[in-house]
Structure formats: structure tokens, C-alpha cells
Length: 377
Image (cartoon, rainbow, N blue to C red; front, side, top):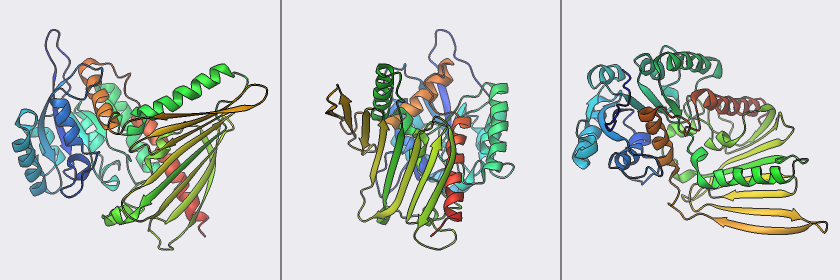
């Protein structure tokens, strides 16, 4: 049920949520930044659009297999923000919401095992067949790539046929520090055209495990890999990983290290740990180039870039620190604003992750998992 922008009038997008859990509606006990309802409410009141023209929003439905939870969430937000959520109703199935609320677009915020599976959990395809625009939260699934690829192929066909705008929530692709890092690399490459701009990409992600409250997050069958991998170019050609940790068959390992090679000849590595106490995670991205090294620290919070360059015949090294104030760069707002702007205007140039592109990241996480299980120690 696709609608087109009308000349001379403001476009209002009727939006539905698939999933009434924490991804879409936040936590009752802990403040989480990925609360899509909070972001949509902000955008619906005309804030958080950056340089984009605001799009009118009306939330018309919340679908969840737990109908009582869907009703409760819809009731709570309808009372909290009648301007944006005034028409919101709860539904016990996606089909009922699509039939009765008739949204123009949906945000899919489900556990990875509950979507991206042909025939059983293919909500993406059900929406696309009706011309409903789709924002899918990462990861796109936790099912084997050979199955998820069927959803990818059919979704691509349906999106082209019905003019559906599809975006996947890899939010770091909208991050100002990440975009600045890429800008610095591009400038260095332009200044040194004879030298490869990137020789190595090193990713580190260490989780504070007392903060991981849900059992599904510990089960590789139900959850997914780190979103850091979405920052990599999609030309990984080979890789190997080794796990050290708990031997349980389906338990997420306490420590995984993975290494791979890009088509360019550069190498990459990921060290992923579930090792920290407390509630603070440690995240870091480091890029080595010919004559330059850039390290991005704390991309989730008070991010900063540390840039080291070698200059001149004496090989003098310069150091630069680029800081970003916490809260000044809300990539959660940017990713949804870009998607909604594309729906309203037809300009999808601001969307940084299509489903097909996200599938490449998904394949890499599965390759790391398969290799680590084979090489477990």
C-alpha cells in the first residue's frame, strides 16, 4: 500500500512497529539509546532531522506475538505522546496490523531468530508484497545464510516491483566519527596515490557481561554477531578464527579472535570478548595505512579519533586528537531520518545500508562463527 508524496502538501507517513520489545520500545529498567519509539517520537515532533526536511509521522500499530504486550505498549505510548502515537493500536499478528491499521511503513525490531527466514518468519516479504516500506534492525537474522539469501533475493525483487524503500539499522554507518575516519583515509589516499590507503583494520569489542540479562543473547542460535563488522568493506575473501572459552555447544564464547584478508590485500581482525565486569563496554577500531594510523575509541559514547601520521624525509610523526561530544552525534536519529526522508521524497541517497549490503556483513559473521567452531580450543 505505497503512497506517493503530493505536490504542495506535507507528507504524513503512517508507521507501524513489528515487535513490542526493547529494540523498538526500550527497557522499563535501563535507559537504552536504540529505543526506536523514542527516536520516532522525536522525529514526529519535528526534531532530530538534521539538515533534512521533517516528515509528518503517525504511529498506527504495534504488532507482537504477545498481543497483551502489544496492547500495553500502544496504550502507554498513546498516553505519553498523543501527537505522534494517538492512533496506535496493538495487534497480535503482523497480518492483522497490515490489514487493519494499513501502515505505509514498518520498523522491524525483533530478535534475530524471529525474522529473515523463508515461509516461517518472513515478515519482510509480507510487508514488501503490500508495498509497505521497511526498516529492519540488525542483525537481519540468525538463520543460515543459504536460507536468509532467499529472503534477500525475493525482497530485492519485491522492492523493485512495488517501489519499497528498505533500510537496515547499521547505525555506525551514520556516525560522525566513522565518517570522519573515512574522510581522513580518503584525503590521505589522495595525497599519497602510490601507497595503499589501508593495510589493516583491527576491531576490538569487549562486553560487560553482568549487563547481559537475557538468556537469548548467550545463545548463538538466537542472537547475532557484533555490528562492528558492518563498518568493513564488503570484499573479504578468506578468513580463520579461533575460540577460547566455554565448551557448551550453543553458548556464545567468552573470547573469539578472527582474521581475514580483503581483495585489496589488506588484512582484518576482530577480537570479541565477554570479559568485563560492571556495565561499561570497551570498543575500538584501528586502521593502519601507509604512513597513517587512526584509532577510533568509544564509538558508542564519548568518541574520539587518534590520528598518527609520518611526514617528511626525517619521518617525523605527528599526533592529532579529534573529539566528539557525547550526544552531539545521534546516529540512531540519522538512520531513521534518512529512511523516512527517502519514503517521503524518493531520494534514497542518504540510506547507507540496503538489505543486500547488510547480507554481506551477515555472511561474514557466519563465516567467523563457522571457522571458530571448527578451530575451537
